[in-house]
Image 1: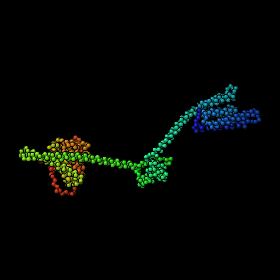
Image 2: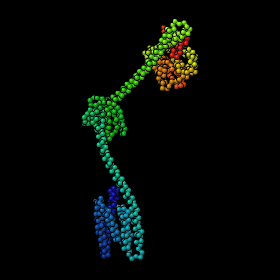
Image 3: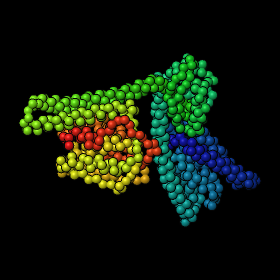
Length: 612
């Protein structure tokens, strides 16, 4: 059943109907013209005229029937019998065309082309099958008329010619039928797709309707303040937005915008940001903001705004979150982190101090015990004149002297640390030959190195380099580094002292082939109380103050010290001193400075006995 509802199909059917009506009008005009041309005085002509009049009235009747069917066709488009009406309509047109051909009395009449028009229209309306049937009926009708014109002819030329002509009916019906079938299938497919799209559209509309309800529910119950505003007023504000600004209803916010609640120093900047949103759809801004509510309270918020089309009008939707609790929480978090860091530092410092005092107590107790034991032995052998006893008494005295140096060295280091922290250490700068000073110190400990079996090599690229330095502090720096090198270098090892210089600096390197320092201890080695081995069973004595004091003295000279070390291969301390001279000449102080040998005995007291 052909029941296409598309406007294109309706237009085509209406066009065919109008053309058919026009064809009927054309046929009537032909008949009227034939009637008017006959001579009314001749009986035969009168008979023909009567036939034409009869045909005229028959055609009028058929046209009336056709018009009636056409009107019914358009009015009952939805009814199932529409196909029957179309078939009757087509055969009425065929009958009218056949009558016109019969009474034209001419084989060469062009009216027979109306038959092929009927085949075309019925095929377009009803499809290939009905088109072929119409072609068959039209062919039979035309050939029957040919037989009527020449029923007794031996060779009916009309019949033979029209036999070829009617074959075109079938060709037209077949070709147009195929086209109609393809178009019908295509329309049915499109209709099916349209139905599916309509269903999908209905589903989407239903979902959107639910989404709108859900969105409104989420917006109204959102913990954030949500505004929608145009350039000159608020269009929407949820309950939290009203609470944030200190109002009870949207009507109270009429003729106001968010700019009316901005801190005075933010208005210009925010206005430019909102203008940019209107110009850049899809653009979003987010920033921390401060608004002043109705009560005059400054509220810190996170402002997120974007362009939005609200009920067809360009607008801006703004989401504001009160971040005062977040700011307070962040501040508390930072304070907690800072306090934890301070607590950890305090714990670490307390740990170092505890270790330091444990170490100090050991460093004090050990030499005191030795001194006390030596005094007891001296008291025991006091009245003896035996040569062996005298030799032992001498050894006890040397032990007492060495441990006295150890105690004095410890006390000096503690005093230096205290003075440095208090800012009371002053340098006695003099222009001296730094190369000669370092070389003298190095040469003075050769005997100690030989006793241990360690080789000391001194090398310099220049024999003289005059710079300003404190001789006593430099001596202590070099002695401390050499003392450490001797402590941690096994017999057979070497210590290298090298001096180089450039235009601005003097570089002193003390390098050994000792045990080295672990990588995780390098950063701590210059810290106060720091020791690589903190156990009481370590091989060498010490408090962990020496390198800290060395770094302090180097820093006072405006220089720096760094460490290169690899575990198991040795260490290298590199001191860089500025190559400058002083114009101020320091006079000798009343302080009695001990000689170099005494200082060596002091710095190396935790390694060897005093050498006379």
